[in-house]
Length: 538
Ligand code: UDP
Image 1 (cartoon, rainbow, N blue to C red):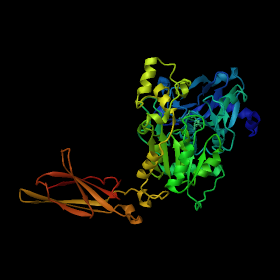
Image 2: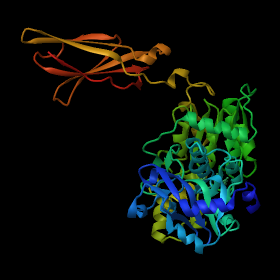
Image 3: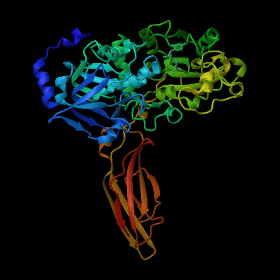
Image 4: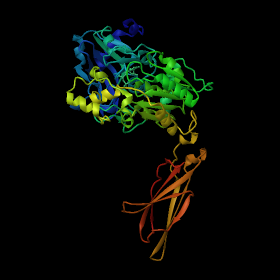
């Protein structure tokens, strides 16, 4: 590895002098540790102390300069998981003069992206926490590109899916453990620390029970753009006119099994008159799985990390997620949330085993595989009797682990019924284009004229022009919403109109000031911004 780094020759004396004179320079984006990514020049790392080092000189810069708040709790999250206390980043500070007494720095010439992977052995975590955030962090900062070097500081070994991480850079990613072989004091010429969280859609339940993130900022478009990139790296070319429709059953071979898988395969094939294929992470290469999924009509799988691969399904495909006995599908929705992101255009179906005689439990297994024999007898009995796992926090709730690691005999007729009742549209058919939707701009040249008729009646004549972007669009349904609010009142009267002017006389009083708010609505659901409020006095 060290040879690799030194391939790019740098003038060592000049670099050392610059470090001593200029120190470390840091400028960050983001207001809080949870949304911060920092750009550094000359950030160093002591492989002996396992600490990042900020060198102060007359020319060093530290923005934000948080003072002691830098430790409350940290400068930033090093993984994409929000505010996880094992994933914090900070540095220690030294005067640049201390370099005289330190090991000779080894300079890292590549632009570095320094981060933590969250759980590199779990496919959902690999995609959601690491690959998508890396991909879009690289797109966010112009210094970062596929020539940048990734540094994984969480301390794991390569993990089960290192091949996928390698697609994110043309250079070999380096692990924390490998840094020791490079030198005692590493100095990153230019580096970014932290990951963008803009693409994550799920929180795993560390502080409140798991669920979709409160403020999802990613759409299917960006997920599919990433999927396309990954497919390119996997040498998969999309065969748009695939000859035959087929169903993929993604099975697990070690735990959370479908015990009547063969029967299920046959039944699906018969019901939907399609070929049915089984894949598993144990028996198929990742690229074979993605190749199969990218043309599939339906994906059927037990709840589990393998379902994150539904991001490779074509638009219009159906995702069928199976849940073991006692597990409420509404409480565990990482894959439902993914499938139903706007623009993913997947049809999502959840099925749950509700028949206790069809579940196979494993109380004797180790706790992390759902065993419960280590618990008090009373607690074991309670768990065995319980019909649904109550909402809980991550990650060691024994009742949750007991239920989620059950095997299931799938009641085939109930499953097929659920699929058929949810999938009303013809299988594989895409939703119509107009649903994706562009939003209207503000209405223009809005005007209001008031007229009083005597002392008891009054009217407001309000008119406006179409939003500027409408003339470039084919919109099926254009409506305008007008709110009329008496000044000083909290309530307002809403109207939905098709035309661009209207005379309001209902409930309009003379000698009164009204505020008029107007916005355009495309296709009933795409609400535009309000134009500047009009003030009219009768
Ligand atoms: N896994 C698998 N086959 C199995 C069990 C697990 O391929 O029989 C994979 C699974 O897809 C995930 C990883 O092993 O990538 C960890 O699985 P675990 O059950 O811990 O997590 P979950 O799938 O519930 O997220």
